Each structure stands twice: as structure tokens, then as C-alpha cells.
Image (cartoon, rainbow, N blue to C red; front, top):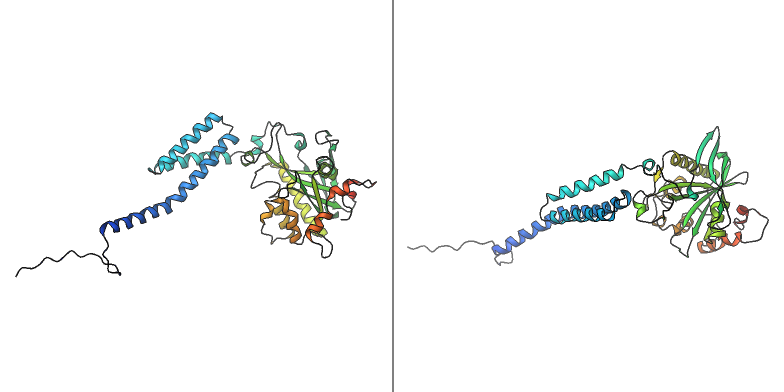
Length: 358
């Protein structure tokens, strides 16, 4: 009896329809591509981002010419594109980028700015001398202004007893009608009626203008300015005509002393070991975070520290600003526009005048 050949068995899915061999290959091939994308995709994106950062580094930090930067950027990008097909070229791209990053991280302000002449407003960094229970602050800025660009350069020594600090005030200054962007400063009030103003600022070399991109690549220093209010505040209210709001905080004398100690130690540290300014990670805005954590160790940060024009609103919501009972923040802000009081005819000193109705 002649036996019939049995047909070749095929996998049958639950639906009962046979699965073709080509469909199985496509499924396997698709999974392989997905797996490769998930594994290698993030690495390619990381190296591409590092390429972009390195181009900025060789231009701003290493001061390469435009032609050299173009050759560097084009060559490295070409290797990155080739590595999509031949992954061994990824090692070349990664090695070059790591070399650039390593050289960048090895830079120090002492070497970078060894021969730099600083612009006059930031010509001197304050220094700190501890004399028993007292602190002598040298190079406290006390410029006398006749206009924004016409002023007498004056520095003074400021001897304080930290145990006599009584109050902490916050000044938020807006310019050009910008509400989201502002400059934030502090002022410490002492029992003898004196005030010490504090401002974290960008220290610029002569002939250099501040920019966001250069600020990412070690082009400036961060400087803590210690000054009189007639310098820091009056420059803004009377000559730059900015909108300066001055608030009294709820800090107790003990908290004020803790904040002052932090400022003194920070100023001393920067005078001994200068630090680079960074447009994102180390600027006048991010410096507020550590100060807030001195008052409230549980403070975890807030996006309004990045848009520091809203820093006073943040402080109000956290309960750090003194205000009248049931007074809303817009009402408080309207009342605390220091420019209104600075323009009043009065025999009071500037610091007393801007604290009218505080």
C-alpha cells in the first residue's frame, strides 16, 4: 500500500491561521532593531549632546579660532555619523569628548584670570579678618555715584560684632519692565543702626560683556559684593531707575546671625579660592538656595529660584516675609516699592528713607 507524504507541519497560532516564515523573520528582525535602538540610542544621543557642548568649550574656554572650531566640529560629527553604521568609531568620538571635558575641568580661576584686569565695579574682592569676637570686613564697596557711569571708587573697612545683628531684609530689583527676571540682594541690620548689603554678582574682565553662552564656559568669576546700601541699592533706585522692592524678613536675631555667619564664611572662601561663574549652576539666583536652607533646613528648592523675579513671591508663600494682617502679596509688593520712598524729600538717611512704612 502506497503511503501519502504528510504535509510539512507549520506553527499554527491560536487563531488557527498559519504564520509564514517571512513574517516570523520580520518579527525577529524588528525586535532586534528595537533592542539595538534601546541599547545604543541613548549613547548616541549622549555623545551628540557632548559634541555640541565640546564645540562651545573649544570656542569659548580654549579660545580656538573660528576655522579651527569648524574643522573640529565637522570632523567629530563625521565620526559620529559613521559610527551609526560602524560602532567602533564611537570609541574615537567618546575619547575626544572625554579629553575636552577633562581639560575643561582642569581649568582653575587662578590660572584662567592670572593676568586679567577686572571691570571697576568688581575690581576688588572683599576679604575677611577675624579679630576675637569681631569681624573686620575689608574692601566693602562704597561707591559714590553721580550717574550710572560717573562715580567715585571708594572702599571701606566694616567692623562688626556678629552677635549684634538684628534683622535681615531682602531686596528684589527688576529692570526694563521684566517681571520674571530680577536681581536679589540681602541687607543685614545691626543694633547700632548700620546696614551691610550683600550681592552675588558676575565678575567681568575689562572689555567683556556678560552673555549666557560664555557663562557656561568659565569666562567669569562669581563674586560676593559686600557694600553699603548707598552703593548697591541707591545705584538701582536713583540712577538705573530699576524697580527695587525691599522686604523685612521674619528671621529672628539667631537666624540672622546664622545667615550672617554663612555670608562671612562664603565671602572669605571666595577671596581665598575664587570660583567660576556658571549661567545655570552657579549664579546670583542659585546662591539663594543655601541661604534659604539656613532658615529652613527642609527647603528642597523651587522653580521660582530660576525665575528669580518671583523669589519675593516664593518667600511670601513660605512665610518668610513680614506683612500686615490679611495683606496679600500684591498689596505688600505695591507697598514695598523702595523707589517711591527714595524719591521723597527728607532729612532721613537713605537706609531709613527706603524703610518708610516697612
